[in-house]
Image 1 (tube, rainbow, N blue to C red):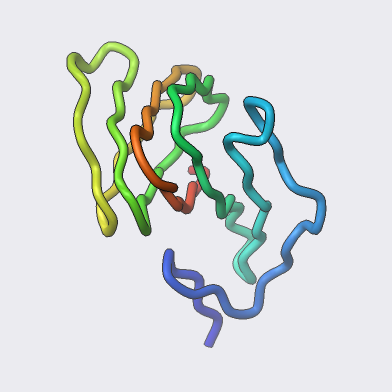
Image 2 (cartoon, one colour):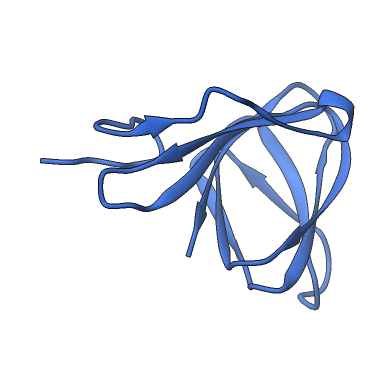
Length: 109
């Protein structure tokens, strides 16, 4: 059985070249699951960052904590490990990590 959850990936292809943003403060690797679903697995160092979205995304926070503001959805919301948020396609979100490192899995819809 092929399995692709936010805590463990089996039967996947991982791209060796890193996706590096904001002078290395956000780094991820692309993961393709056996069913063709694309994800990125990454870390965010302290700072505030804005990401534009082409496709709809689900960001799962798997370790650490952050604050997020999604375009058109009001105030900042805090997230800790084992929580997630959705971002619409053709939109953006702002994410802030104040301390430590936040780890995430981003799934594209």
